[in-house]
Image (cartoon, rainbow, N blue to C red; front, side, top):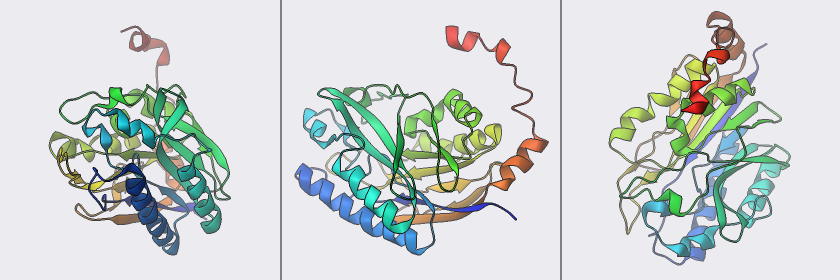
Length: 289
């Protein structure tokens, strides 16, 4: 009997302008996500991932210290606590991307991982931090991650997390596979242009190279007042053969649901013996260059 897990990806448009008061912004996005998580539950989702920095706008569109006020502790912060309640209510594993404060002045782009009973399993901190003006000023906000590339044994699958810009670096994607990930989630905030072409290229390639499922999430719409481009949605699941199984809309909120047959991982890896045929003893230059 196949081991099938129903996954869901939630992409959401900012419902108000980003120059609204920070508490108003955060509450509006939390309220929206409570409804969208409920929709995912109604569709039978067992493992759900939210978009990058889910409870606010993509604020690295500018450099402004006011956004530090959106940070919260993990797992003690209110957004993670709220999602723990929802995970417990719906019997749902959740990946919850937030702006984390470790201590005053030390902040990370982080995803908390919650089991189906609401238990906090751990977190991943984004390793690769872009600083690509105009509009992607992330080094102003985030310290590079220091968690390594953990995977988390949940009620339904062993999952890993890679966040947005991380997806351009195959090394961490490989480590997640070697660490046993069956599904890797990549919550993102990316706008139309060259990245849109890469959106459907890089992550299916990671899925093929490592023999796992990938869930890629992107937010939606033009976020004012900056409008650095169109967040084009198109969140999707792909399988270990690189095939896109389900994909979201470009221009609206969406809950993307797919059934993931985890037995396919063994089937694919039996044919393509990439892990067997690796030559790590020849890759030393990667850590020296």
